[in-house]
Length: 261
Image 1 (cartoon, one colour):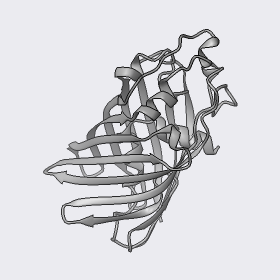
Image 2 (cartoon, one colour):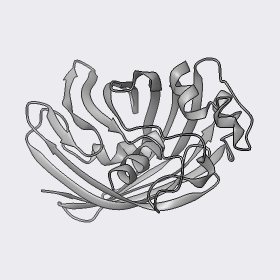
Image 3 (cartoon, rainbow, N blue to C red):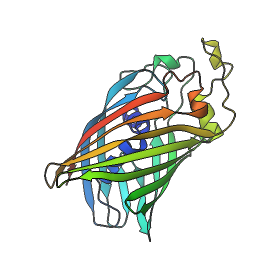
Image 4 (cartoon, rainbow, N blue to C red):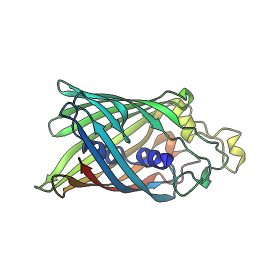
């Protein structure tokens, strides 16, 4: 299940992964515990033409001093510095199987590519509110497998409609990967290419994908809310040119019931 959760969160558009964390109490505003369960429709891997429905559990404990323990954000600290919000956390990437290990993990379209092992990540983020638009820059730095490389994601979100019980917002994000990350997830070595696909060397860093979609929050009562997201993820540049990429456009759907203790 660990790999299923990680794959779900990493495959979702940045805006849909973000809505779960937003239901937790903001940093430095008292202790809180938030739990949720939902479903996500995501591809078997980035660029796959096959998708599946996966469970999306969520649990987060935040403290008044800014420390948080989260199945989504990892273990870290968040605070506000003037108009900026910053956070640093230790997270985990479940990697990628090179075969369909079970319903929740892997894809047979990756046979011969070799397993990408799970890895500890340093997740650093800074956000800024520009009028009604929230901006966020996040980097995921690989700690236990430096050869897998790092990513940098720039995202934005803005409200588009709200009532007493419902709020709609639009979100978009773009991810940049360094040379090592690009080769790990989209490159095909000469040895890997012997299994029916051409070798491919991205040769450098670049933008891997852009995503956009709509978030919906429905308030049931003071304890329960429903968060949903509908969007599309588009692989671009060297990631789109990879022999592993079967579809460059992938729909993303997520919905979750969330409870505040």
